[in-house]
Image 1 (cartoon, one colour):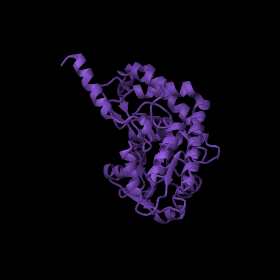
Image 2: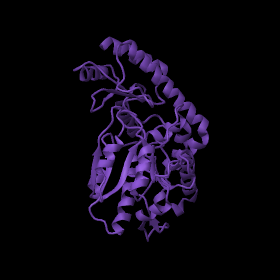
Image 3: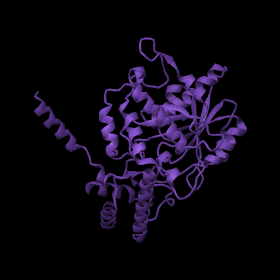
Image 4: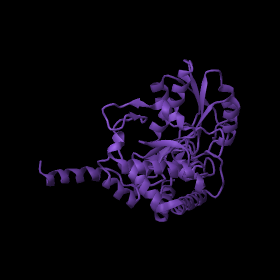
Length: 373
């Protein structure tokens, strides 16, 4: 085929994809324009063979320090992963490998019932048991339930800072104290919340400021406005990276600690660019605007007699609807080209107010919701 024919075919396929403007179900968004520029500039960079791309590697190291600083330690060690799933797998793999070297065989970790589905992959790939702790009435993990599940084979606890379904923040401070008391590894999954919670008006303890937090996963490609394929894994103790190392004798780099071999440097460059461009002030403005629109949405739904399952902590909204109406409303919204999602328990309409959402979008959504109801 000619280039023109291929371009035409690509445009045809692009038109089949949904634009983000009417998507209220996704934790992804349009990347910042500087991130797009950087991504294109470093498309051929392979961090899996990083000695060939020292400039890209330097940017990755600086990104780790910048995100570490945001989360209260510039000395954190880590790398840019493909996203939260890889970060969660690798973090638990590191503590599993360390415990296996010490002679442990049957191991388990304890996660909240609201934990991301990546922990199902953790159980399968790492051949360990994933125990789910129940939630409190505010849909945060019940620390007493976590403590009851701990036994001699427990190697790690997991807390969520920005749950996927409800945007809730687990009591990380209490989990940290429990991890210290029981000498357990604590992973904070802040894939969504890592670039939101530091900029909220309400202060939450959730990061390396707590002594018990061992590792944090955070996704710059969500509220950090980087290009897709940009997660970040951070360890308080740099030696945990050693638990992930494999030799790569035929590359310029003689070892790797990432899950994937060939690793895009473009997403690392995009993250570096957007963090340098926006800085803390720019990120804070984005979060404040998302929270303003979240409040606007809640005020509008309350006028319609529709109330949230919990008052939003972050820019995630879950709406209670009359029994039997949830699926009908979702279907009707989709017929009007909106994309929303549903939570599992309690069953509710779920909306994420990302940076691509504006005030006009909120008003159009509320008008359609009122019409459907």
